[in-house]
Image (cartoon, rainbow, N blue to C red; front, side, top):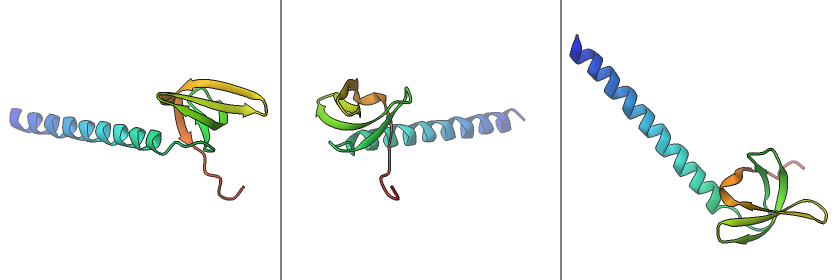
Length: 84
């Protein structure tokens, strides 16, 4: 009985570790694909276009003439421009 519980616990831990690795890999992939001209959504819900990339910082333009300087890790997603 105890071995069964330990086996179930071990499987659960392995699944959680695998999911965590996948999330980290996806986040790193997203940041690697950032380039000037990309339409992005930030975790704060702000949408904008990447104007410049400076190391770990991004400059995004939210409306014409309004630019924000944010940290790269604040990008939640890159918007697809297909169909627009």
